Length: 244
Image 1 (cartoon, rainbow, N blue to C red):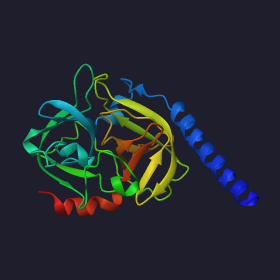
Image 2 (image 1 turned 180 degrees about the vertical axis):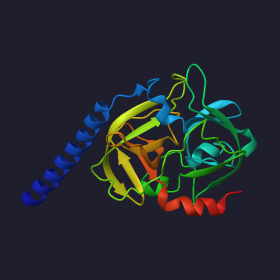
Image 3 (image 1 turned 90 degrees about the vertical axis):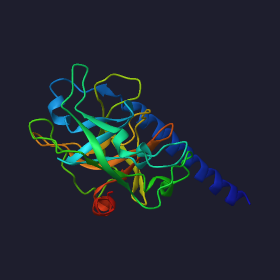
Image 4 (image 1 turned 120 degrees about the horizontal axis):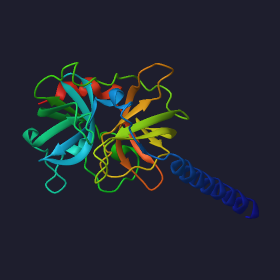
């Protein structure tokens, strides 16, 4: 009995250590506003508005397509998909203007998506990914899509999160060096604290010297000490086949 209790207490101590470590990691990542000089890198990131109100963040992946979280295009009361005509994507928004504005002609999200109010595990958010088909192409002189990349080894890596917060500045914020803590069912938890409005924000691999950021995932949801993000590349072909 004494041995079993000792082992149980040891496991509990390990769990508490992990929880405390996660909280510390989350606190270390302090968001800051994207500077004017950096803004040219993030013209492909925009504020997704529903009926004129900022709701989420979305990221341009081609001149005619953007990625966001599925729950951003679903009405929380009715559970129905938001009519595309009510959606607007304001790319590269700053306090003094924006890079481009586009409407949305069609949307798609992954099969099995459920707009859960309580996150109980990776399966709850694994399908929280949506594709937006824009009403007309974004010109190269307006905004630049963020290149998409596979995320083959997320665990232990560090990524940046760029997005627009609800009720915050009109400019984007960036959280640099978020640590990938755990991966399951295509969902990765990051040691970053996020706030409302960041859902759908791009998760990017930190570029090397002179390199461009590479898009790997989209923000789905958050807890007190972590954010949950969904890998994009494995689902893109399916989303494109579902667009309507």
